[in-house]
Length: 251
Figure 1 (cartoon, rainbow, N blue to C red):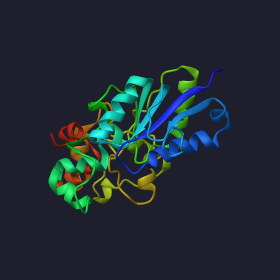
Figure 2 (cartoon, rainbow, N blue to C red):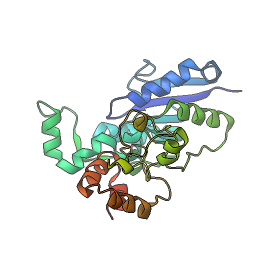
Figure 3 (cartoon, helix red, strand yellow):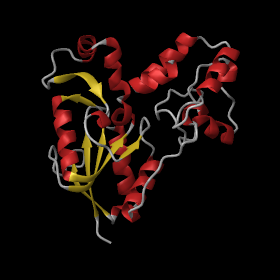
């Protein structure tokens, strides 16, 4: 079996998803012997450059002109492009600049004007180039990254689960935070994360995006039934959900 040429690129973000990707490759002998990393600033392979690849995995959000250039170059030189993590899939935390405004966000983050020209808004990867696969999460899960790589090596189509986080909660026997009056986006958010946030007493913030068919009516009834303030729901949903997804939740 020939090696799969994999290029890893990080746009604006914390690079946590990139670290998870590289850890999956490095810690799995079966994958490591079948994957050749042909570009990655983190591991020092063609640092800062773009290489011809079978698969380009891109994390981070398109915030700067340079991000946009890297994304387009990666698309032109790869057969398959994967958006890795919530920033790449929906804009993530960077997209909060669209809420508070470009100037205010830039002033809050940088002590002086950034050297790299910034776009007026933070864009998920799919708004700039065509993306073949999206792997959401903050960070993206190692288990799903490994499963995706196995599918790519076998030439098979990868699909995310469409069950909601509530399914993971019930399977683990966890108490429902909505029933305790705590705002939680578990009923609307794509599961597969093993409800890790709820396990540690933190509500679901929707970092994995909405399911394909969110059950909005049931969610609204639960919010009303348990006396949860709508403003609290709006604040929670506004952190990770994309503008389109947020519009769907808020009606």
